[in-house]
Image 1 (cartoon, rainbow, N blue to C red):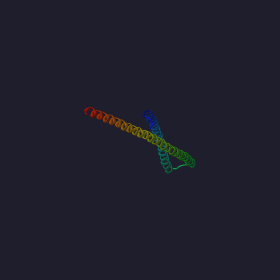
Image 2: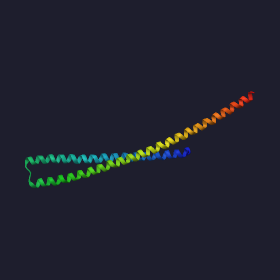
Image 3: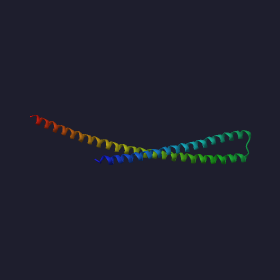
Image 4: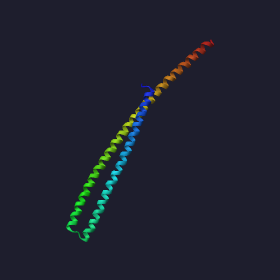
Length: 146
């Protein structure tokens, strides 16, 4: 078994790694939320613009106005599609960061388990030494009484 100080060092390193991974995960989640907000804003703006267009149609719209609307809607649709791709990529980064954090946590827990086993083994040996010393002491006491 590895000695306790080496295991403690490994546990500290794994803990630091896990904490760093948790921070990166938090930043990725925050970035994803921001990209989703931008997407929602674009979608809301598109819906508003389409509603205004419908109102303009009722009031009468020139061919040039209709063409401008179509061009602008195409640009909005392109922006929405692009932002959806950004959201997808952000979600993938979150999943990647989550896996990194989980791997670090598993490693940290494994080292903790090894440290606990080493401690249990050390306690078992110490108990055997104590029992042996007690037996020897009892045997000596028995010899002196005779």
